[in-house]
Length: 315
Image 1 (cartoon, one colour):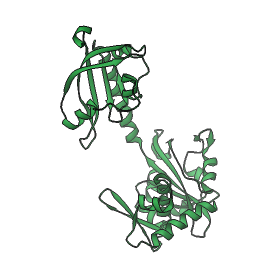
Image 2 (spheres, one colour):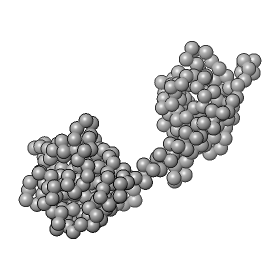
Image 3 (tube, one colour):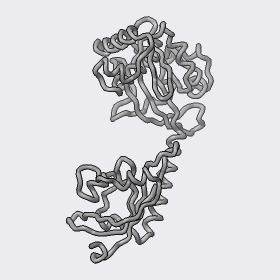
Image 4 (cartoon, helix red, strand yellow):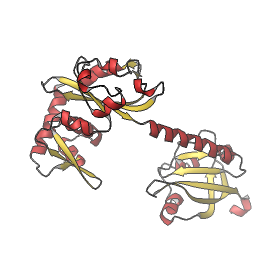
């Protein structure tokens, strides 16, 4: 706990010497900590109102603030936020939480109420522990984030998929508390499930083809292979690196035809060979092109369709 508070105070000290603000990487360099760790501490300071953040394009710059109270900050968030004391009693609650979780109950009626009586997640288990155990650990300065399912009074027996975040917080009286942030990710989960169903449908279609077909993403991971392709290698190739699985290499090929496709944004055709688990080489005509783009149009996966060639043709 002491070490946790010391790191928070050190960030405040660093920012007090830089009136123009610092980026996440700069603060991480000063502290000698990784970005993920520092980001969590910055989130705590933001929730406490001790610092503020401004965006300059994609960059986030953090500044020391005059001490905006947490009661002012939380009402600007679309996420549902509860501030609890060490007995899990509600100290503060934002408008989103009142409207979406608490059925529009008046704020004054909820302050002092038991959090578990207001929010129906007591039975939620995280890594075989009850949520109350995790809340207790948050009081000791630990940050938690995990997915959950919430059933609320206002949902009429339906459920919301949420991301639950627990931040250690310092209350007005100086005591330790917890900021509970509930982010509704139901739409994201629905889109992901829809994408999984689409991938399963695509997989069934590709399995009907006689030609071996494989999809690879920009991280060199095999994301899909049809049954004819699996007969060449084996059934457990999804998720593995293409250069290791197909060519027996420890690093990407040079040159890499996938990177060439991403650069030239066109279909490429040529001869290729694949090493089987038995160490044999099999020769193919490869025809590959972009299969998937990111929302901003950046190529992120290719599809490669193979045609078998005879040994004499490969020589």
